[in-house]
Length: 148
Image (cartoon, rainbow, N blue to C red; front, top):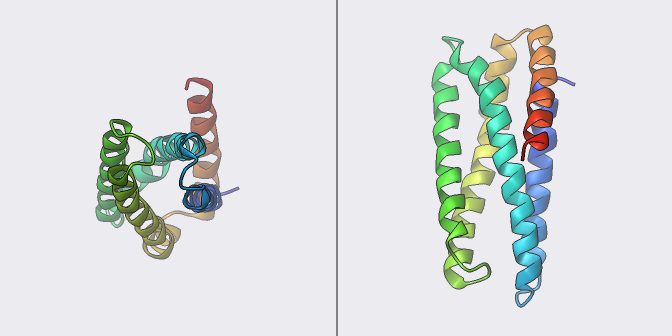
């Protein structure tokens, strides 16, 4: 599996969890919290693994550095909102407002990666490099899962 397939796999799971959370009954706060925590854990692991592998490789390439920096900045914004939501009561109006912002930002970010960054990265990484990065992101994600 190359880096693009590995990342797209995570993106599909992220979209699925967002959709699942939106479908939880309004009064079922326990389920909302459970699905949100699952989404949060996936996002944080995905972001960390992507930063250590894909973004690192983008930053090392003169032609892709700008896109890598932009994506890294967006990850920082996502983490900040996730942290803010941790201080809110799940299911409250403020919590859903922040989730709506997060959802919009994440879906925009995923689309931007897939439609803008991936085509550029396919030009700057050989297929061998893309496969090596795919292997590496799997290793990083495995290490993150083992430690948290």
